[in-house]
Amino acid sequence: MLVAERYDEIVRLINERGSIRVTELSELFGVTEETIRRDLDALESRGLLRRSHGGAVRNNDQLEAPYFERETVNIEEKREIAATALQFVSAGDQIILDASTTAWYMASSMPNIRLTVLTNSIKVATELANKDRVTVISTGGILSPRSLSFVGPSAERALDLYHVNKAFLSCKGLHMQKGITESNELQALVKRKMIEISDERYLLIDYSKFDVQDFTFVSGLEQIQHVITDSRTAPDKIARLQRSSVHVVQVESVSS
Image (cartoon, rainbow, N blue to C red):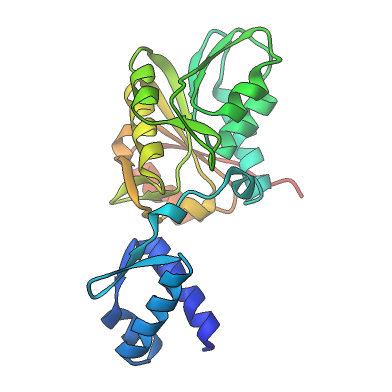
């Protein structure tokens, strides 16, 4: 394995797990611990991780990908999931849309019906602005430029003022034992509050989010009633969710 390939794999493992030890990396790649320490020092100098005693941890400053980057990942899957999620929105509903790109796809295709939408997303609010029958409520708060959304204590306090019947949320990872996780703690706290004030919760995730544990805990799986996912999600993952009494809606096919 080339040094560059080892670097890429080290970063992938740390981003996936949150932390890793020098001894484990040494065994995994078949190189000395001193070599791994030099690798970690080099990666830390690039801002790709942070050194810790005996290993390295994820660089939290790099966790949340900019919105324009997230827009280009699994586009068709997200569009199909969003279109399917809209089937569960009815006139008169009071709903939450989070700051995920899938929620934005929902907003872009939202019919102009009598509806109240509570969101912390600038892009969702802007997308719905030309639909005169849709009432849009923005949380306000601290603007996160990477996600174009509002976070922080002000956003959380604003959510405390409301109650909705449906919430449509996404996440960075869904793990059967570890629950729903996010890459950014401030986003996780807002989503936790969104779950708290809603009656029904719909998790919108594509195949890549399954069996992933990210940095910050959002909620346990027991707080989610519905999961909407794409056709690439493996049948065994669907079956595990169903055994946990989660209603799963799987998109039959992705547009070519």
